[in-house]
Image 1: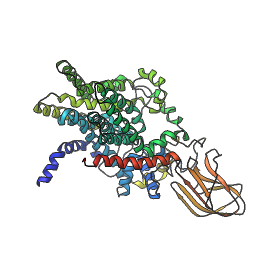
Image 2: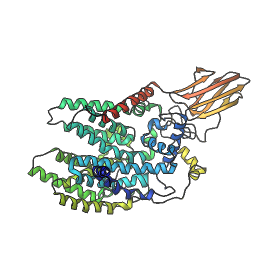
Image 3: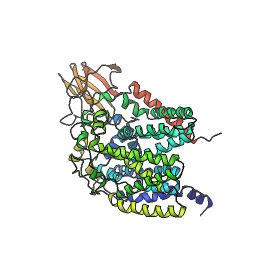
Image 4: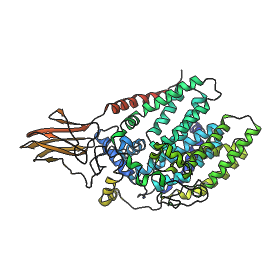
Amino acid sequence: MPPRILNLFSRFKWYLLVIALTIPTFTALLRPGYFPMHDDISVFRVYEMGLCFKDGQIPCRWVPDMGYRYGYPQFEYYGPLPYYVMTAANLLGVSLFGAVKLGFILPMIFGGVTMFLLAASLFGNWGGLLSAIAYTYLPFRASDIYSRGAMGETWAFVFIPLILFALLRLYQRPNLKNSALLALAYAALLTTHNITTLIFSPLVGLTALLLLIGKRNKLTIIKYGFLALLWSILAAGFFFLPLLFEQGYAHTKSLISGYFNYLAHFVSLKQLFFTTFWGYGSSEIGPTDDLPFFVGPVHLFLTIIALVVAGRNYITKKPDLKQGLVVLSFIFVLVSLFLTHERSSFIWESLPFLAYLQFPWRFLITANFFIALMAGYIVINLSEKAAKITLVVFGFLLIFMNVSYFRPRLWLDLTIWEKFSGYSWDRQLTTSIFDYLPIYAKYPPAAAAPVFPYAINGKVSFLDYIHQTDSFSFTTKGNSGVTLVLPQYDFPGWQVNLDGKKISHRHDNPLGLISFEIPAGEHRVKAKLTNTPIRLFGNLATLLAVPFAIYTLTKKRK
């Protein structure tokens, strides 16, 4: 083997080993067909974003078929980053099913890699590998993919370790490069999964504050830390800023009412610690959910060992950063698990914004992350031989005890034509129709949108009719003036032009559809969703902040 290849292998062998150990988690996906899941519209979302790209609507905000074909601001509010990856794969020739499978496979691989990167920086390569295995083979992550189909949450597991790694790098060496790394990592989470961002951000902030204790260069760290925060917001600006400032333009009460009321989804101590029940059903009120919420027994055992080792080191050695992070991780685990239990309801009532998490058991995201991170600490004081043995024993147990969860309940010999036809197609058009329904609509439609606009109080004919993802264009002919209604929800940014001149439009109908006056005669009509000032600013911020961050990370230091 050429020396150059040997050098590359030697440099990346640990990462290659992490990837190899991840393979059993996704082998079930490497075959034709598809599998059922709770959030079974990822294929549809990729298809819709592909239409955006083909129409030049980048970034994609408005999709044409959702909302029963009245259009929908899907990616104005829903984390788009994983779908950009999958859509890019699809446009490069990967099938829609293949793109979504890739969307589940990549975060499993990258999640293991980023956890190894973090844990190895703290506990060495053997500890990093143990944490990576523990992180990869979390039962919760298997449920995320093969039961819930939680694409955004699955990808969030990639960026959580990377954020903490970048924060520690910035704490150790406060400079522009580490600030850029933290900014990109946090921006990736901001554009991936809103709920994980809401859960994880306070813990990151508290960790950052505690890291400052005893540091002499506090002001320098704070300066670069605030720069990273601002930089991340600008880097994620195309999505995060409109989400922040335009959330009032969509109905959101449906996100926290009925089935999604958090009071129905607390879990019991038995479900967390004293069962290994596995199911593919749903979360229901009471302790009889057909969905697993347990923390793996091997993971729990590793957590206890790590805590014992940290306690022993506290007695026998001078406290250090690694020990402090393990103790802090354990506190975060306890807090996260407590917030999944109904005894924490007083906290949920005191902090109304928590209702938008919908399911208290979503705090298992942070609980599982910190449990996996703690696992690597158990080899901290061991000799290399003992560390190897420990890794082999617990690595085997983690894989053996949990690998069976990484498979779907059913596998369907399904084609994309069957997925996108008949009842299946109609169901995808209306799934989650209440989520982010534009505020001008008083209620969702009972039937699919008409293909063409329609006139009120008169008749009109259409020529050269073109409907794209975010625009309409056509010519009208009529003997009298009419009120024309587009089969399109109104939303801030929609503009209507008549014969090249902007005209005012209304949405004074039950569905909040765009309507406007057309005089008699022949007229050219164009309607398009344009950027509001905050969307335009967000787009420009991303276009500037992301390339500058990448340049800062990759440039050679003079």
